[in-house]
Image 1: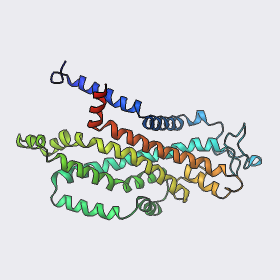
Image 2 (image 1 turned 180 degrees about the vertical axis):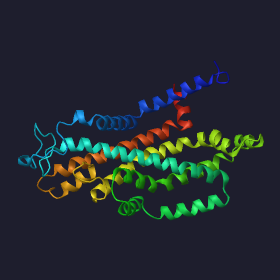
Image 3 (image 1 turned 45 degrees about the horizontal axis):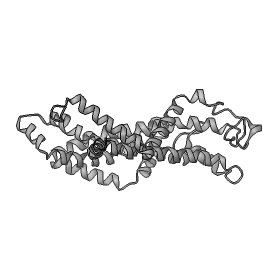
Image 4 (image 1 turned 30 degrees about the horizontal axis):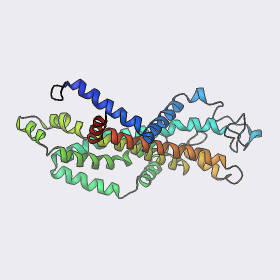
Length: 297
């Protein structure tokens, strides 16, 4: 069957096949996706994996080095560090993923309208985005948490809000390019409404960059959550978070370095994995890479 007579379902299968070939041959992408999946499973099944209650104290076992009972040792209150790190995966992924979902839900519609309609709305949005981007995302989140207080919902809201400018600017620039293409002009000439054009033609063609930026931004959101918890403005003790675990370990780092090093490595690994996954998504969603993968077949 030639390309001209190929069915849409066949074309989709070919696209997915080429995408998975890219994932299979790219070791960094495979490792990144595997690590992300592992963290997700750990967060989901934390009560089954953790050998101890993360808040249970064993004062007599304070600052025990890693051993057969406490695999990663204990902190100054005798709490099992391995169990606390497992439960710390939950706020990291919860805040990291949901905050970016909030950013996309707010930023993408604004960027689509600004990039398609232009005019005064685009100028006002551009001015507001420039103002927001003048503040580092962590500093903006820190100021908002200081005003609103620290809770899981607040962290999701403030970190999500701090990433809105990124998605507005990305979506606006992508929509501006797509709205000037011939098929959009043809739809407009046939009397299609602005909403229909944005929904049916522009949005599907800008989803690729948005998905890639979303996966990369999750890594930044996880880092911001850990940073806020480290500063005492995020997840509050005794609830475990990688950020407050690192903060607790700083005070005893010379005596018991594993208390700070272990959660620091987990944080580094998760951020690195999401960045690696974002790079693989960029390759998988790039038509040129998919085409070259199909030719190699």
